[in-house]
Image (tube, helix red, strand yellow):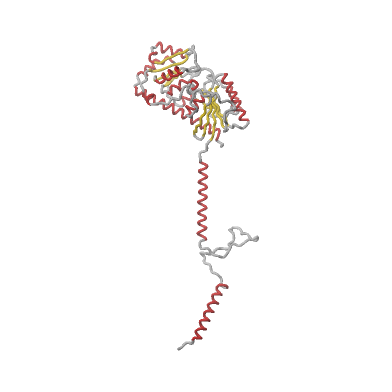
Length: 440
């Protein structure tokens, strides 16, 4: 049957109109269906137009972002990484080694022992007669600056830090008067808040009479936080007063000795040595008599003088160093105090000190281990003797030692002395750090 073209055209027109009306209805009148997966919950606004309790900001706009959840997760992970990085950097900054600054003014010769032998700091210029010497050195967390020499005078030392160590001599009245002037100068610096922390390294009186410095200690209302005191003393408590070694006679130009293989292994021609002042009615007289009566003078290098000399000549210093280097033992009789420079000088050359273990008079007793409490506590490998009349038997035993035994003992002494100086260095810096900077 033949279908009329007109009817076909009208049918097409009708279908088109019907489809258009259906599409318009769906667009403008039908309710949108949003899947649960992509549904975004709208938050009700409060009375003031804000967000009610428990909510984020209200949803704005009707457009759906199919990557919204992924973006939220990415931002959350990124923020966590940023926070972790900040915490990591904060830990690094917190654990970063904080450095402190301390200045040392060496107004006594023992300051050179502290600086060159204990701290092993450099000193410029190296000229022995220079009136101004200085050095810089880092130990643990502390940067030390050191100044010494006759040109280092009050008011003319560059002071760019507020922590100070003052090295003084209190052995005799004239030295005490000089040290007192320096302490009064430092007191003024403390009062003006230029200096906040003060320590003193003091060559004490050989009779241990150091009462003059007592009022300057903080425990007595003064400004000195710490005192490092030479010689045994009942003051030593390891809280604010610490014992300090006498060391070598830097005032007589005794040098820093660097051990070498020959010093350790050489065959030394003498059993012992003693070069020094022999005081009337002292144990030193007994020592010299024992050596002479026993015929031991040929086995030992001995040079006695009746009067103490404050300075060495170049020749006398050389003879003394040669005696230390050529003998296995160095005899160390007590003087005004049991502790003497000779003990440390003998250690420098690996010559074992034979120490008279007797307590000198006055107020130097500091417990049952006195004298030489500091050295004994450090395990000093010395020979201790209480009566020089026992020396001949000691030297006879010495003759029976083999060269191998002598070399081994020499090596152990040099190693001990190096370790002792290192321990004193660590103790000094730790005490300074703990007391000056513990709250910093």
